[in-house]
Image (cartoon, rainbow, N blue to C red):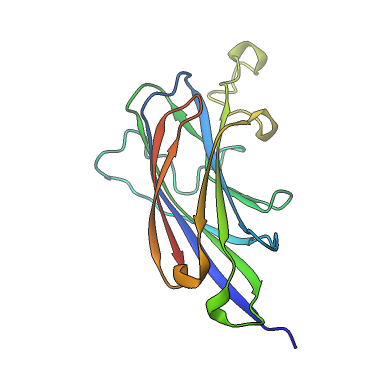
Amino acid sequence: MPAYAVIDAAVAFDRFRNVDLVQQGFYRISVRMQAVQSGTVGVPLACYASDRSGTLGCDDMGEPGGSSVPGLQSFVDSREQAYVTRPFYVRYNDHTACLCELAHFRLELDCSVSARDLEDVLIRFDLQFAVRPKQETLAPDAGDVPPRPEDYSVISTHDFELRGSGWLGCHHAVPLTFEEHAISDTAVTVHTV
């Protein structure tokens, strides 16, 4: 009879700091989780956002979880089995955007030998970018409308691997730095149980 380990993991996004992004525009981060050997995909169950008004060091607070404007909310992408943060607009170097979001994943792993022999888990973070829509293409009273979800493209990827069973019940501060064409620093913590 096969035995399964059910792993719950929370990925907490605190803030995003632009170090040297070359282009102003809308950015967002998607995260997905997968077992390395078996390819089992972690299912994003929920997302949470909090209001960090008055947070020191943030240039852009945003609204908790985004806003009521379509395209400015965080969401679970069921097609990609990923969590996507709310979009944030980067204006200049050293711009800091507070994300204050948490994604909850569940991963079922076969542990028929023993719980100590769990396989490695890969957490993939994608930095996505979209240009700001031109105002002449919008209705005159449209205001500041974000790009459509299909306008975003991945410009950089960061992989973080949790090896063996030593990562269970731990809290990892992930040094999430995107480097391809975009240097930025993101404060992320991974909690597993």
